[in-house]
Image 1 (cartoon, helix red, strand yellow):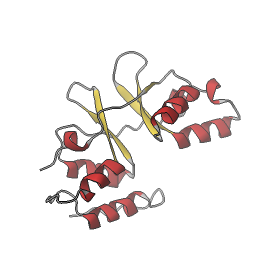
Image 2 (cartoon, one colour; image 1 turned 30 degrees about the vertical axis):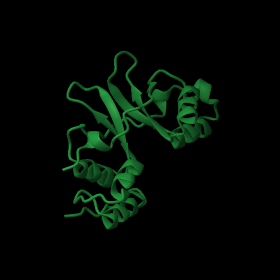
Image 3 (cartoon, helix red, strand yellow; image 1 turned 60 degrees about the horizontal axis):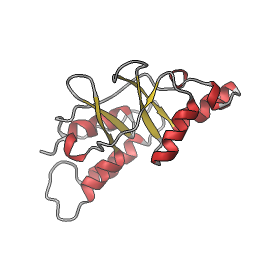
Image 4 (cartoon, one colour; image 1 turned 60 degrees about the vertical axis):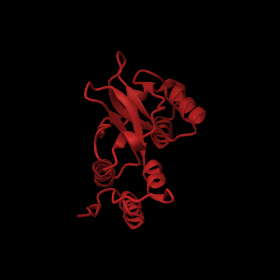
Length: 159
């Protein structure tokens, strides 16, 4: 069994819900990533995710500068997550059924401890010499196909 903690990225940058979209875009630029977790205004509790697409759509639809829009008004508030002790197949199932590419990893005290991306799962699957029944290459290909379906199409769930 491979746990999420073995595969996840522990170096996670975040933004606060009261930060501007400009601040979120800067974090994404600096970290070369397309999404970051959003923490509550006070404390370390994750309350959402913000993506580069969220930023683009919010600035376009409001015809406003990113510096004038708070992250809280553009972020996804449906926070899907897993625990570091979860089996990687549990996280893969969440990624598949929720059609997301990045999954925050939250410990039992509600603290963000990492993020698991589709790329992390792919790298784990492609490691030379890895003997694992966790996720086979054909299952990874199906996972990518499933999360790439247009919204509203039911994802195939592997047995």
